[in-house]
Image (cartoon, rainbow, N blue to C red; front, side):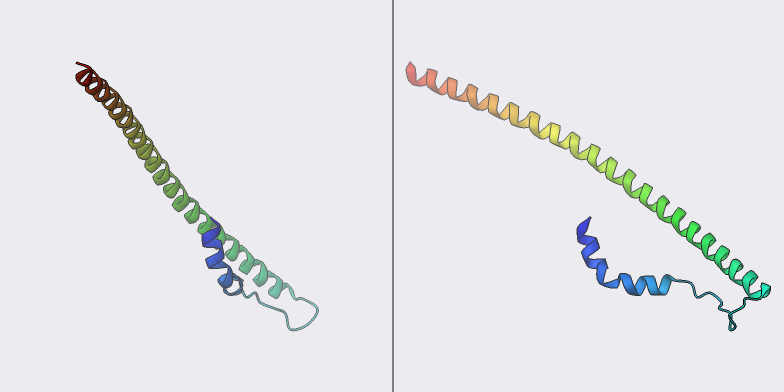
Length: 106
């Protein structure tokens, strides 16, 4: 996981800068109710957008995890077959050695 982080690290400040919503600012130090209401609406819209993005990312991540689990299961079965093949090959080699020793002994 650290490989993608080292690749993405130089771009993080720019991504954060672009992702930060530009909220309405009051021109005077005392905030009017209209400006406050607009800022609240902007914050709610940003929170809704972030929630939708998080749901989308969670769905994509779940799909990735499911794919990885399926691949791990497949690889585990292949490893078991390879282990069985190695045991069979070793058994045949030992039997071949025994037959050769018997043939030389006669």
